[in-house]
Image (cartoon, rainbow, N blue to C red):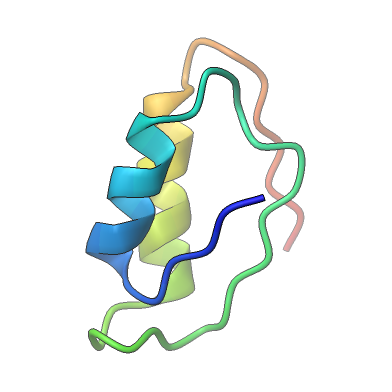
Amino acid sequence: MATAASAPEARAVVQHLNHSPLLIISELGLLDGSTGMFALGDAYRRFLTTRLRLQV
């Protein structure tokens, strides 16, 4: 399990994962003013070669 309060923090967390996340829970608005969907996009691009299903 990992947590992040902003998109840059989420990006840093995702860089250290060895596999795609099984579940991502995000607030719509993050502390840095970005959106959770923006942070999810970063995770999706990181694991584009694996299956990451986004449930909206």
